[in-house]
Image (cartoon, rainbow, N blue to C red):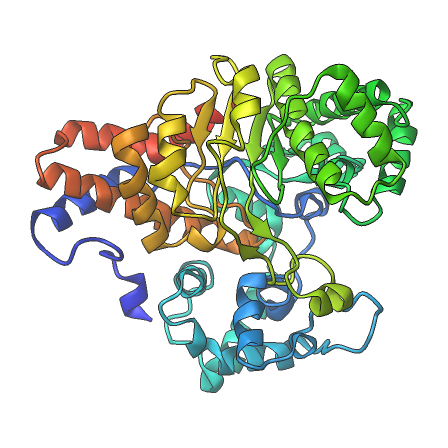
Length: 469
C-alpha cells in the first residue's frame, strides 16, 4: 500500500522535474474542490443518512469495479448488482466484499486501484493491502466508521473541502432532493445540471411517453415543435432555480444540424409519430444539439457534449440489468464536420460556452485542439471516462496544449458516482498536471512563476470560470 500513497506519486523519478512537481503540488494540493459535473446522488446530501455497508457504498454501484470483475468471470448477481425483474442477487454485504477483495489484484495498474487505495488510506486510515486475508478487517473497519456522524454525507462533503458540486438530473426530474437541500439551511453548495437525453433521443426507452410527461410537467403542447421547444425552455429555467449552470448531452455522436424552422417542425412531427427511419432519428438528435446551443446562448447555461459512447453494447446485460452496467464502449468520433452546423450558428459567440469531451483520443490533436483553439464558444473538457487516468491525462495535455493552450480547457471534473473517491480523483489530476508543468519548466518552455500560476488555474480557477460557478 505504501508505494501507492507515496508523496511522490505520479511525479518524475528524480532530479529537477521531481523537485519542481513537488513544489507545484504543495501549492495546490489543499485548494477547495470544484466538482462542476458528476453523478452523485443528491438524496445523500438531502437526507444526510449514514452510508450503507462497505460493499453497497464502494462496490455495488461502481461500474468501474464490477465491469473488471465481470470480465474475469464474476457474475454481476454475485456482486449484488440488482436485476430489472427483481431476480435473486447477493444481498450480504460481507459476502460481496470478500468476493471483491479476493479479486482486488485485478486492478493493478488501473486508475481504479489508485482511487481506491487513496480512499482506503486517507478516508478510512487503513495501511495494509486489501486481499482475501484482510477482507474482513477492512469490512469491519469501514463499516464501523460509516456509522459515525463525521462519516455522513454532509460531514464528508465538508471534510473533502468541496466548494461546490454539480449533480446531473434528467429533464423530467422534480428536483425534490435539491429542494430539500435548499430548504434545510445547510451551507454546502450542491447544484443540478440539465440532462435532457430522455426527451431528445428517439432511441431512449419510453421516448414518446417521456414527451407526454414533459408536456404534463410544463403545460406546453409537446405534440408541436414550438410547444416542445418551449417545454425545454421552461425546464431549463426551473433547473436554474436550483443552481444549474450547465446542461449535459450524452449523444452517440457529435453530429449537429441546423434545419430551417419549417423543416425542423416537419421532422419533429415524424419523430413524434414514432418514425423508425434511423436517418431521421439521427437527424433529430443532431438538430437538438444545435437547439440546445441556441438556448444556452439565450439563458447562459454552459453546454456540455459527451459523445462517442456505444451505450449498452451487450443487449443481454441491458435487458437483464439496465443502463450503466459497464458495457458502454468508446467509438470513433468525428468533430470537425459533425459540429460545423452548430458552429456556423453559434461558434463565434463570445458569451456562449460549449464544452467538448471525447472518448476518441485520436481526435485530440487532429480536430478538438484546433477547433477549441480558434472558436470562441468552444472549450475542451478534461480527459474523460476511460481516459480519466494518469496516462490519459498526460496524453490529453501533450496532444492539446500546443494548439489549444491551457486556457481553452476547463480544468478538471471528476464525473463520478463514487462520492468517496472525489478527493482521490482530484488529487490524481493535480499531480499529473503538476508533473506536466514541471517538465515544461525543466525543458525551459515555461517560467517557474508561470507554472505556479497555471497549477492553480488547472486545479481550481478554470473550472469555476468555465462553468460559471
